[in-house]
Length: 84
Image (cartoon, rainbow, N blue to C red; front, side, top):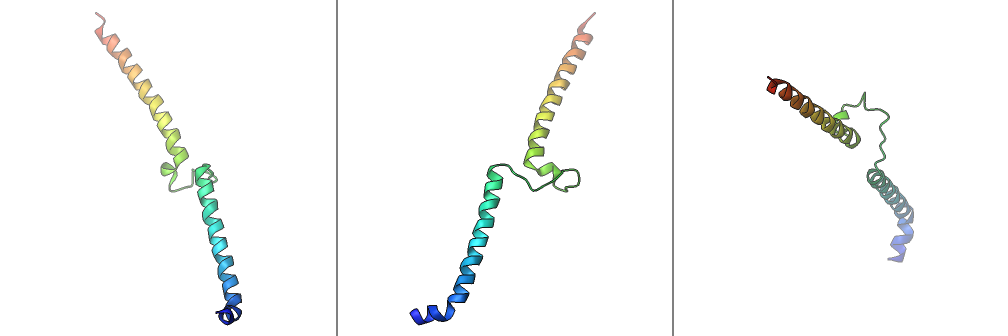
C-alpha cells in the first residue's frame, strides 16, 4: 500500500487540489444564493429577467400596488354610478 502511494502521489495531490477547487466553487455558489448576491449586471439584456428572484419580488410589489389602485379606481367608478 505504501509503495502504491509513493508511485501515485502526484496524481493524488492533483485530485485533492481539484476536489478542493470544486468544493470551493460550490460553497461560493451556495453562499451567493443565501446572501442574494447575483452575478448579473443588469436585467435589461438578460433572457431570464422575469424569472430572477429580485425582479420577481419587485414585480409582485408593483402588481400589488397596481391591484390596489385598480380596486380604488373601481370603487370610485361604482360610487359615481350610484349617484342619482
